Length: 324
Image (cartoon, rainbow, N blue to C red):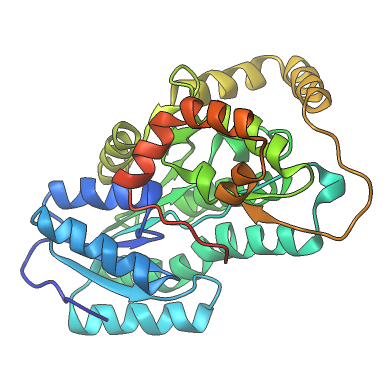
């Protein structure tokens, strides 16, 4: 652990806080006078995130830990609460996105998504929630997704895990009712975090990257990540049951509730329009920046223009290029 914060400000534990939406949310929590402990698998990302936040006046500590490691999470929380103070806000953001048709996916894709985005919040909540209950107060926010309400095409591992996380978040709120601990299910749609550069692509990787990155960067469909983070943090601190910060998430949820057959037909049509699985070959998964590099020069240049807002967000939100 590095850079332990001190003082009487409330302490927020942000799991997956080193980049993207987690980093944006951490910045919003700091602006609301919270001390921060950021958790991520990658120590370099964490140190870079902490340096940026400290330059803005935030009190930050970072801990490298994998949310899939239940024992590691338990030890982390014990150490933080012993040395730094009680965790009053838990925000679980850690996630992974795998994009591609079902026929090109592997069992490991599903296992990874479920371990990080379902077992991750379960692991952290099992440790933190009882401590909050014992103290009689606390706030938990779990980032699920509109993809945990409606299964988006070519995002099946992601939606599988997010459906579970949505049920867990909503159910945990009911379980903790009356204890002084609130749980917020955060169900956003697409946000411009620069995640298209680190999302993982299978199948026809350049074409999968093209459609996903386009939707991920269009202002009418995706939302500015800083604005979304502000709404998310406000909702979590207010103890709201559910927040759907992006307009498309709100619309999609309502349409599905009113006309589920129409939603299913629309999603089936979208699936048929997306790239099909290539002929059988050795499984390969690559990050977005590699998938884009495999495009033809003109297509790559066109994607650079389309994804301008996302690339700017990537720099602002501490996104780095990795192949792990």
